[in-house]
Image 1: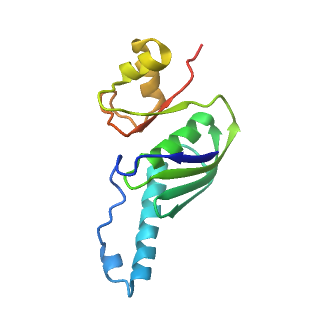
Image 2: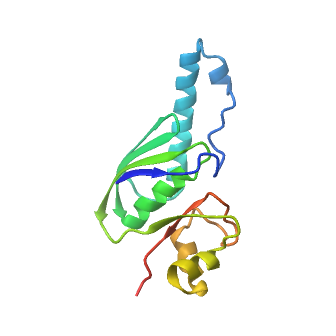
Length: 163
């Protein structure tokens, strides 16, 4: 548990700052900000829901560009995927992780993708074998849909090698 930092301007652009009709119709700026915040929270809840991970007592809060997430998941892998999914949203600079894990296992390393990186290059650096890239790809599903589609600033899980 703790605060994980992310590149604020990298990632999925789901937290649009555009004014929806509800925001535009708000009686004052404070009301408009609160409507926008509630809409953003719904979008973040949807992003986590799309992972298909069972989370008991999921709570997400958003203050400025920091997401705080509470809940309980079955595995360390599930916890890390939720953190990375939220952090890889454009406009989010940090995730305050308050998720507990029922069956803890060793934590993965979080790695920020650099320009020129590929999953095989990352696997070579972390595992000593470029052909182990499928383990990194599998560890980051469903966030990654294609092993060739990673981008600079994206954070990935690099799990310990399985025996």
